[in-house]
Length: 338
Image 1 (tube, helix red, strand yellow):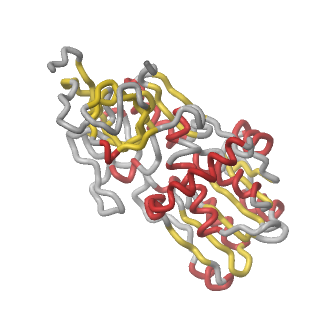
Image 2 (cartoon, helix red, strand yellow):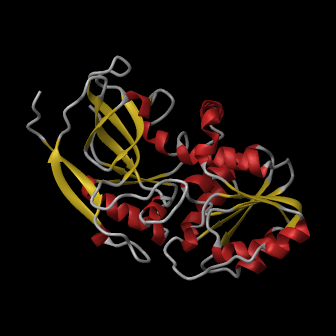
């Protein structure tokens, strides 16, 4: 079957130095792929943009290979099957996959998961029911292990991962302090997500505000940002505190060495600090999704999405992550469902 329609993809044009700009991306027109036996053709509906992608733009060793120059950038995509040569998916099915930033992709079924629209809006497969939700769930419950009455501090508390961490910590009975960067975000974290205290890292003296907000110290620090915010948390760690290290968005675009300096505080508090990535828990994803969807159906979990319209706006939406523009999960809607 010959496709007359055109496809479009977004390639990495050059590696960024510091904060990425529009010139790091290139839009390329291509043919809609021909399917091989067993494959499906997917029309992208929602494309996820995530902070971890910044690291993959550098040609450095990490837990995932770097993006290749002059090749499409890839990430989380929820799409709809428009053509199938597989007995596992049929036309009209919604799927989730790690796919190139393109309007259409051919994919093998083993790289896809079916998305059930009955569980919630299909976009939640990229947010509270997907990678960010599972990151929050496993990082907090497995590494953070908050107990009822303990104090949990969450940096990046209004983002896709942080906002879910705040809610799970509350479900588990913890006292929660959320750190974010605007009055609108603080209002959301406190009045919608249920945090007990909130701190504006752009306007408040974070160290003083934390001392006031955490009179009994800090038992769990879920760290999404690193940098000066984390510097302010470590002096307040209680004995045997736990620190899930999820991200370090404050330093992703910086070349110079940046703190925090944690060694002395960890020794004194006998704290556990553990970096993790959500793929570490891939054999438990079904368990995590089941628990998240239970809480969701019980209305114990809510979510916020910042949805930008148009495939042409994918790079802009990605760049917005580093300006702190997004409340909740940052997504780009690139097509309508059929």
